[in-house]
Length: 114
Image 1: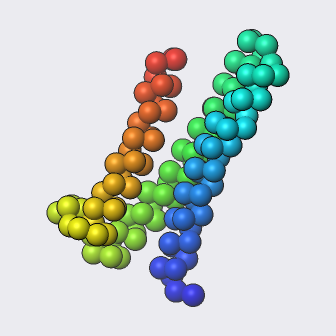
Image 2: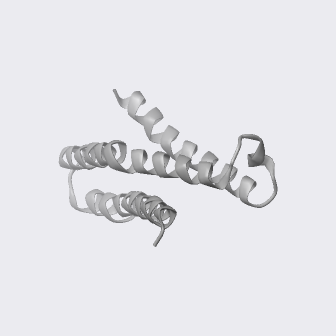
């Protein structure tokens, strides 16, 4: 196993755990909380779940995603101009846009509730 295989593995593992956590909260925790809890306890539980997941995201998932993503892009020789190239460049550009959109939305919603 090479160093770059390990970097790619960490990148994919972190992405899977991060997206899996978002799906778990959205598809499992939220519907159950809506069905089983009254307004006040539901708000407290969902706020606590959101804060904890946010802390884990900022402390673990984002640093791993950004660090390994930048390292992998550097290893592949990606430049800003290559993001418009057909194939790998455009796919990477789309992934970066989706990543930014996912990160931007919770930050915007968090600032609205503060």
